[in-house]
Length: 207
Image (cartoon, rainbow, N blue to C red):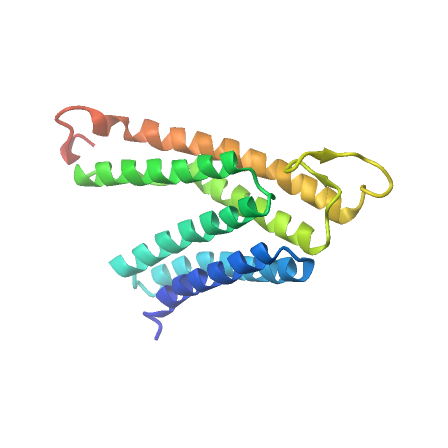
């Protein structure tokens, strides 16, 4: 059972993704609150499954596949749902998805030549910032925020709009922009790290 626990946690993230996706599309405060709880729990499993895999030394190909796939689907699917209801701009999600394809391609190219490109500081920070922003948006909407935001642009500050939920939504939107910047920088980080792979005649012995 211990050997399968990390894989079960990764698979549970896929199930949570589907539920959160539906809850966000319903676009009602109660469902946003439920989505926020599931989002936090699913994010925590991302930390736990990696720890357990290392703790019990049960790292496997299927485990790595499930972990990486669940992570990418988790973030992109929820962001797409947010685009659908107008909470997140499409251009920001395109940046995030493009970066994922870029990194995937670079890693595949590097692997074919015997080189491993590890996640750099920008990439690790990007993941945390993006999850923080997404959780903040869902929590704010769960608390009925609707007066202050960047997406769509609503910046009328008065006694009716300056509330904790609205300020939380505005802050979450700002963090989303920061996540977009971090995404671009982490993509550049991977590209720079992979530059030697593009050189003719490169092989693992040169790394």
